[in-house]
Length: 251
Ligand SMILES: [Ca+2]
Image (cartoon, rainbow, N blue to C red; front, top):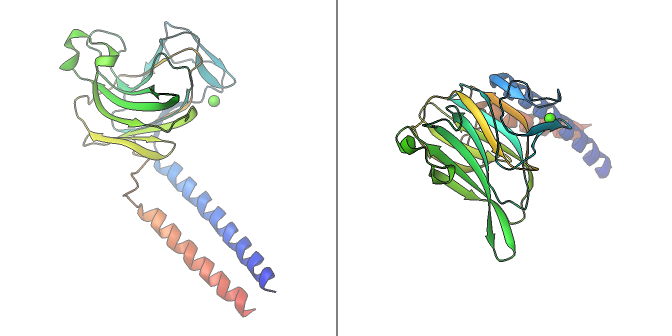
């Protein structure tokens, strides 16, 4: 009898949770205002400019040689840039994603970049993430990428390689937040760059990118911020679940 009660209660709870997740995901989707995206499922990289060597295979954009640059027009300067990045060993050259950029590699290249590299100590190797900026003032001499100012950095866990979901947000105040697999790993305020013409990347042989989504809304919040909608949904779930328990028990 007790077992049956628990099974029914579990089933009701699971159903409610599924419904709430569905509502929450729909609500999130309707709030985000996508400006452009590319999932490379059409088999090409139309809309992108590259003097380098890239291919699209199995719905993923891949680099065929070291230091391959690719970019496309993107004027979003307040919003969210998210993408999947494939990062593997060996890593002799770092990966760069210029989510706000002037024309890449032109004189006075101005941009914010996410850099993904590798740190090594003994037998251990782990990914290291950096948020860099090349400002109009600092790049008078067209300084190399490795000399761009580091705004923030974060060490991943040893052996943590493969596909990663990145999300970068920038709000009106210049607050830059970087999330890896949904976790906030870097945050800083910087206003040295406030306009964008391009979104660009420098990948290396066997590195890949997929599911790029750029929106002009802040789609990720830091953990300190509890969205009123999420709070309402959680309270609602608890109330309905408790009611269901009471009704079943009375029967
Ligand atoms: Ca894809």
